[in-house]
Image (cartoon, rainbow, N blue to C red; front, top):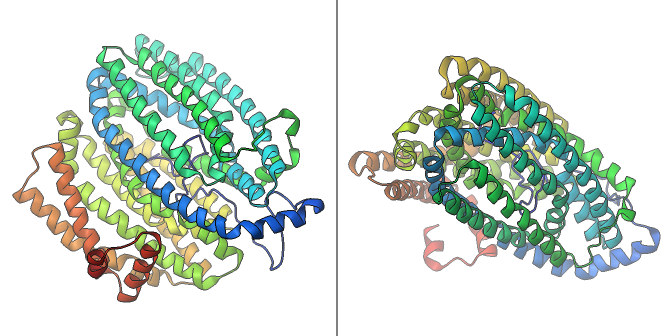
Length: 575
């Protein structure tokens, strides 16, 4: 249960988010000189051509990769800002028009559909890895075989998902506690409509994977931006016309279905040679992807079990209004992590390269530097979120949602730990410790469920959030952190001291600024809340960059920044 999934299968418009635990590529421990490929060895008659092509195109590929990475990251942040803005604007509007009960019913049904992501079986990110490997070898036939194979696999999975949705609609929904007869009928309709989108979305995963494997991140994300804006507009029009869930959900689902046409077109633009055919189905490629994806599947199970049961537990014990209250805390905690996890998403490919070469010094530097930056980034965001949580919730959602504040504080602690330990998870996955990560994730999820079922009886909405935070903090700090330190041979104390000291030092002026704003300039509107929170965060960033980092590290980070983006004289002088 808890703040939200840490990873999921690739969907069109959603390149795999490398957030701590769910990689987009596998880890292959190779001996020097080996030519193992995730797609298998190239056929002899193509080997020379593939190697020659790779040598001829490597400089251009590197330049395009840097450009794609920069534009893709910028596009992802643009999408994030747009989605946050839409959420801030649309959530109170939606709740106000639907009412807490119907909105909570909608969130309850949505929570039930989260579990259908498990039917992906971990293939999504393995698919990207397989296509990228074949493409880098210049093997267009293999790319088409992989894509065609998984169109067939995902079509079968989609049909199964639709059947399971129908089964849930006629068996579980009528027996779910605290639902009135009219709510049962509405929930069944909403679930069936969403089931159609899920069923169609599975085979469309292949198009998103092809575009992502070609590193056309900005192309996928640009489509996602348009879809978000159109969906928000459709939602506004439907609710302004005094329609309810029975009209709203089909309307937004239609937007999603139409967007798949754009994602398919994007895949064709990214890979003009793409050809899909049942005759290209390959059992060999299916086996190769499965051998890696099984562990991602186990992590998926843990994510879905531990991070999406909140609404189900609350709905069963406290009713749909409690689900709506918790959704506010969960949404804000999700924004906290999204603002910070873009950094962690860049680390995994780097770690894989270092791990393949057994480059211990660079792995060690990645752990220390990555954790320092991740902790600093998320700590600054968390200070602003917690300091201004009360006026934010009151101006955004109203006094009826004040109950979400304690839950938000607990989820913010969980988010702080999750983001800060992102580099640790990447180190473990990138060095072949995926079994440990999967076992830790499953253990965390089971403890999470058990605690939430107990605490919801004692503390209600807050109890579910506390039941989430405790195992997140315990497993990450007591299991994954020591394991990652052992891998790179760094004492735990050294990591904690090196990674947390700059952030904790910078937190002092940031907290002082936030408290001063709250006491002497209390915000009187949502805009003022955002501005004062942003200014407090800016204080943290400035102190972190100028005083929280050692001089040598600051110069090194500035060098990285200059290679990506030209830095003007004033900015360079301050840093």
